[in-house]
Image (cartoon, rainbow, N blue to C red; front, top):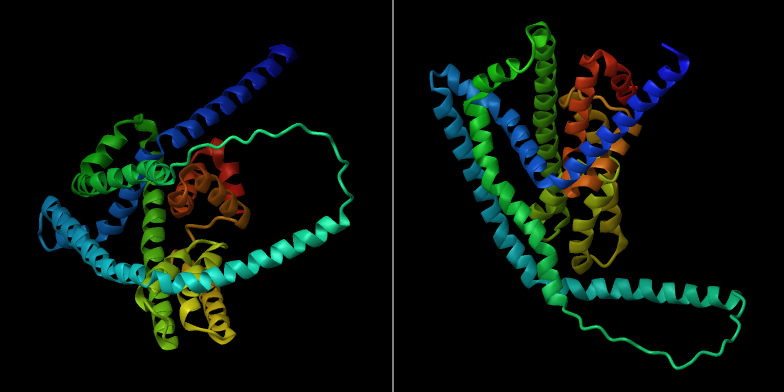
Amino acid sequence: MPLEEIKASNASSVSARIIAAGIVIAFCYWASSVLVTLLVAVLMAYFLDPLVIWLERLHIPRALGSLVVLVVTVALLIVLAWSLIDRIDQFGADWPEYRAPLRSVTGTIQKNLDLFEARVSELAPPEPETHRGPGVIQVTESHSVRDAIVSRLGSLYSFVFAVTFVPFLVFFMLAGKRQVWHATMQLFPATQRTQVKQTLADVTHVLRSYVIGTALVGLLLVLANWLFFWWIGLDFAFLTALVSGLLNLVPYIGVILAWMPPLLIGLKQFHTPGPFIGIFAVLIALHIIAANLLIPALVGWRVRLNALALTVSLLFWGFLWGAMGLILAIPVTAVIKVICDNVEAWQPVGRWLSA
């Protein structure tokens, strides 16, 4: 084959890959509600599957065991949500008391910004005077309430969509695990089924390690935060610990996000810097312990991504799917790494992700 044809073939191959990648990214963005719902169901199924296997060992049929595990899980989630509603209502009733110190803080910040802007404007050269005609001011009608409702309809629809379908998806994945596994094997030629089986086994091990390990780390963080907030006398200690502990699981920026709930609650109670310094110190210490000791020990070495790959995945999936993208970024990228490790042509990408 002539050199010119080889170059043209390589260029067309690269262009085709770029176009294919663009189509995949566009599909992930356009079908975000469906994909996020499916991925959440997959993670829950991997988390609950050991319980179903344990019930099978007690001679309980898999379909019945899946139903029992799912019903108990949904009941626990409902009880947890119901217990939080009262605390959230109480926080809403006390919100005017929290709003006053917030206004004071924001007023001080705004005053300092105005002072800084005034000093900068004094140093800037004066703008030349220009003759302008009478300006025309257009006043547009504002519908803040209507705009707020419309802007939240999309997220509300996505939430209701996920809550409606996730339990059914989890049940079907748990009950029909063997049938789905067998049907998946039939999609590939007989010569590739051994490699596909090994790849799926690695994906199962990675997702199960991540889900169970992350749940244990999150539980430990919530308990530690709850004890600390109760010790310093912070209002809504459990609710604040729950939100702060889960936010602390987010890599890198999690510690900053975890500061916000206790700082917001503490503005009403504490009038000295001591408690706030303690909150900063304890949350930073918990984040360091979780990131460097608990997650490597409980999640396992199989979910190993380098810092750059982890940061890029958080940015990319967070941009596509918002807050859920930050939650799903690590397992999705870990699965991509496993697939790359088991496909010879993509192994350099897998090595880059774990380098």
